[in-house]
Image (cartoon, rainbow, N blue to C red):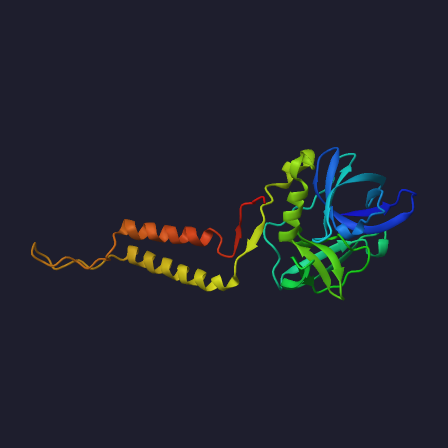
Length: 273
């Protein structure tokens, strides 16, 4: 977590807000934050950390004011602690945390609560979803991380008494787009593939239950062959399933693969337009 300060070309203070370190080497770090902290008057950006008296100059990699996501590249002295990106988004009811520098304070402040809407509450520019948290945030918290189990699931964008945040799906897409063409240098490989994530309809929970029941049925048939026929060469054959044990085992393995292949979430390949 970092504190971000901007100033104009006359040295006058601009905005003070928060950001998250996503990747770091011994000489530089990648920070993600909100785009609305920067405007046409921004000339210089400084990044500070708790317990570190140094002020680090940052350069912008990219920003998108519609999604409200921006990335910075910071020259450092040593490796910084990073916050990893989550693999899946937070869902309604999930416990989450937020940490920021409210009203430009020098001390960090934690808040805890729940996701109260994991669907589209409203859209930034009519295009991108914004999710809601149960706690409030104030000026200075913009750009701060929303965390689940210590991993980034969103970036604070605003508040109406409840925190609005850009969800993981939007963050991953714009971080990847802003890091294209070598803009992030040696920091890019540290972020991983960053494929966009698509949430699968929760109605498929019923499909999971049906497939699991089918597996149990098939395994029971494999374990219990039909009874043998009466003794003697002319006796009728014992009753057996219409499929061989090998065929039933193959079907069960295919159904397991379908379940483990991501019923609830799936990762889609990234496509450029």
